[in-house]
Image (cartoon, rainbow, N blue to C red; front, top):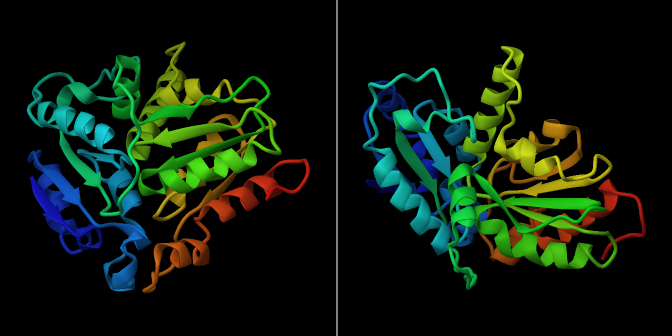
Length: 282
């Protein structure tokens, strides 16, 4: 298990890539991350590391928001590190379309920001969602007009925004994404399987978003590059607005920086208002 500031992943990227290539096993704990490290400025604030986690073969990337999610992921990770690498790797799990049976290394993108923790029981369905990459924190209704999807430390802003959006839009959903990496990998694998004639083959994110009407909009938010979640709209053709950080950070308060870079609750509400028909949201 190794720890480092999240932006310093770039310094060790060559070594990390080679370690994954030769099937070394490790847990990389990267914290603090993003502009949520508000006092230290751009040199220590990471932007593109969520994309590194998605692109690196042999590395399962997670970005949990809450401590119960982290505990669940860590328990799974220590088992994942020890899984047999000699078994066949051609057949992914038909439930997730992930090749979890061959194991690998794990990257945890974490934050030092203090968050209010939910009081809940980690029931089997919730555990599965956390490990597979996503779960509904607020289920969308049959007439859903907006889904807000967040990753990691942006949970409070997403929760606040959803409560405000619900005043002017129907059946709003809140999607907690613990691993964009695993969601995207499963989606890609399921598409390949269908192209090869395997039907039905549907990934977790396809099943989750299938219940969202096509006219609904999706707003994604992450303390990192928006491209990490922007692909969600392509799953079923929903209109999507991806919020995130695209430029070097600055020194300031969390409130000021989130507002400046357009990832605070106000920005999420504005995006939902612009994305969907109806009265202006506030």
